[in-house]
Image (tube, rainbow, N blue to C red; front, side, top):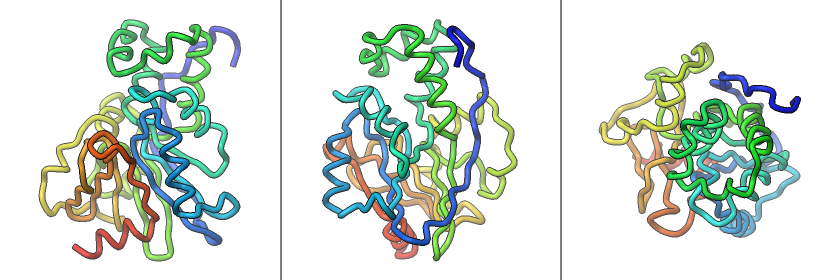
Length: 235
């Protein structure tokens, strides 16, 4: 990126990962700068970087002690992927509109005080390049959808065709009304997994799960794709 070049005001809406035929896929949510806790959990499940993948549900930054290190680790680790959360969205948006800086700082962004404007711009471009609003992850027992706060659609197939808009970004990263609608299923996907809403235990509504447990329990939830699908099918 050239010096002071504007960041594009468009995010990737949806990406589909290839099937992982050789290892396990793991999902974790809302690290908020607590990279050491994630690494400890990866060790506990004997994560194999040669065959396994890790997909994160956004909110990698703010509040915790290692926001910059967490973001850089995710951006530079080839077997790690992430959707964009509302905290990354605010980082990206505030670079385009500096009037949002005070809101970004109020959300836990004081760690950026050590960065100059060009370093922030580079981070915003990296977030835009690497983090879509949603992922689809194929498994041998069905497709899993991943989005930070909730599915913006009733039919997951629509994610492949939706055009980016500000309202779509907000729905994917801020809204959580579906977490309070009992028994609702998203069509054409086995499960949709989100974070965003702090909870002391996993919330399940139909085939939707919310797994953001760090704030309430002190530990992030790390589950394999199989474990996530088993939770939905056991309902």
